[in-house]
Image 1 (spheres, rainbow, N blue to C red):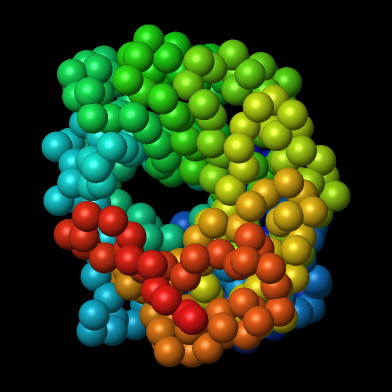
Image 2 (spheres, rainbow, N blue to C red; image 1 turned 60 degrees about the horizontal axis):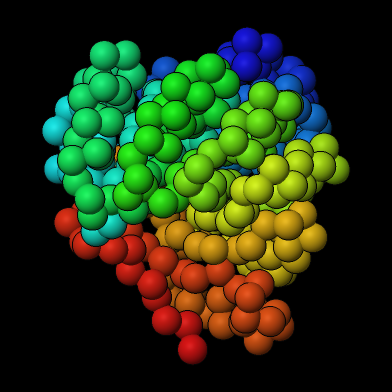
Length: 320
């Protein structure tokens, strides 16, 4: 992570990007910082400003433009937390904001404006959060999120895992991670041992938006997670200029399944301020997924979904 590219000048130089777009990238990066791991950078095509992996991390001037309907807290996270990092939106499960750190800064991130300093379960807050989970027998599943939980050390994960394993009504432990995809080296022996040692069933939800993200090295680490006992699912975001075609979605689903990952959700864009240029209209998304469903077996077709502030569950959008 320390070796990641964090300045736009280096990104433009390494990928031979058009110099006339550099100033715009600087302006956008001043609002939300750039971070791209070397292993992810290596999967991009130099000189291609429209590379689908590059588009996910390239700061653009569009991020500085305010648009009606795009808010700082698009999914209502702040209404679901009491300040200790535990978000309890849906019945039977709660989410732990374990850290504000990520291995990559995705430009469409729905928590790009989130105040992690005030709302995460790190340090002394963790004891309080564990006590709250232990006192609520309705919580069968705990989701480790962030940021990215794989930004934590294995020792820190071991402490959290042991505490949750001691709570008998917690049956499942879910990790939401982009790090496993952009920095596969993080899937090390210690993490695999951590998964294998858990009493609760471990579900790892990775975040892959395009088939080219699934390099041979990534696929090898995903299979290692599966051998360690994790159930692997994918949640993607439908992004204009990245994966908004039936061909891209079909290639993604097939590549995921080859790597041992089940397509789970394809999210409509969370309407957070600064990301409007990634939005795909709902009716176009439905038509796209109808085309996908006509060409793939049902188990390879992710559910098209949206998350809205105040809802008691994600809304699954019918495409039949």
